Length: 163
Image 1 (cartoon, rainbow, N blue to C red):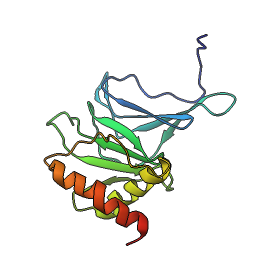
Image 2: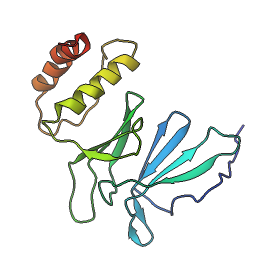
Image 3: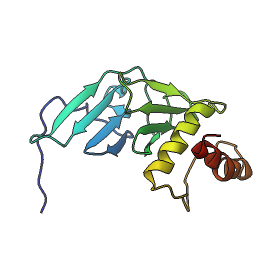
Image 4: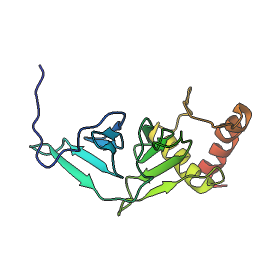
């Protein structure tokens, strides 16, 4: 049976080429192209948990207007946004939002940002019942498979062991 919801609150403006990612009982929507051009640095959450679903606009400084990007929830905690276009050029940026930290803050990830990578690996490992994944899909952006496997096979165990 299909049930149509009429959430309270103000929904995001009409848009295309945005991202929508499930986070528990919520759906996070970010970016896209609206009728007036690029959407602003907006982040909207549709909370489906209460008796009556509700839209929330989350005020957060972000990566700027984006469309055509992808977003994924990593370890039930981190929203990673990758690639897309800002209306002037294609982007290869990677941004992260820690959904457990308040206030929310987008953080641009750099290849040498190993502290955040370690946090993601620990979170992923913990939430996958301490099993090493059989498959991982990731945008490597010129990082070789051998370098990636080195992180997965060696550094993950060291991180877990606290070395």
